[in-house]
Image (cartoon, rainbow, N blue to C red; front, side, top):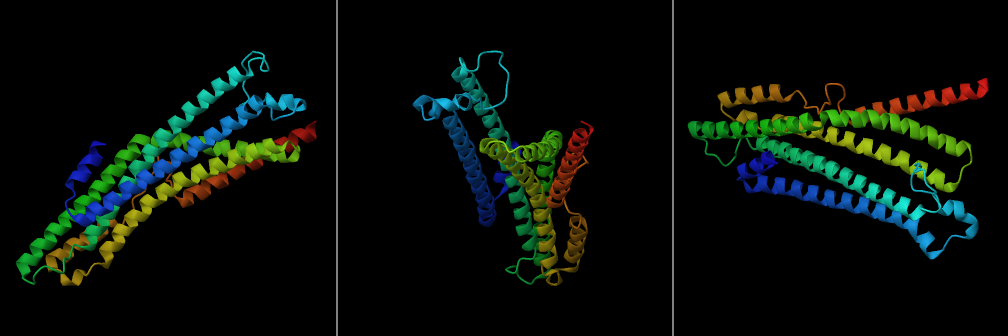
Length: 307
């Protein structure tokens, strides 16, 4: 957070301030939308659990369905007698879990979007290394280009440094989430397959589909964020290549060539050196999940044959 404040304080150009403000506004909008979606979903789930029992909407024949808990847990109590107390405990746990997920994921989202803004400012500065409004006097033009190069390189360096701070902070937890996501998606696909084959109730089918859908969406969004790091860094390199280097002094041209050689290596938000979040990585994760799902189905089929 101190780094973010320093980045804002170092910006003086109005166009650069508009860029960082636009990304901050996008982060605020996405955070608000995410919070609204999560809390609205929790409200719908809680209402679906409590409203029918309070108003007697369900018929007495569906008493077992009425007393079905939100999660399959064991309290070693009479679930029918203490149904509302147990369900209240589950609801409180659900709200706390949702608040934890919202706070951590929205904070990671804000940090990532701020990094995108820094890369965009670096691209803007790279694009304006050669200022057309500078007089044609050699020394004056060289000094202005020199200052622009230093400013552009520093902005790109600050963007990479901030990204490295984010990576060093969240790399290990993110790797654990990735491993958990692959295994959970495989297991939930297998459970969904079992629900379909066993002709279970529509509620079980909908619940399984929602679990699988949420896992895939979460894994896609996290990998999409990693892909955006790559895209924004590539955009910096494209801006360097598109500037009118031939209008700059010879020494400035050599410096631009050095910057191009430095920026040709794309920045990757790798996780512990083991995984790089990207759309290609998302495809690999989905392939791994389907492979594990196939293994589970094969094991189930072999067990059925042995029985």
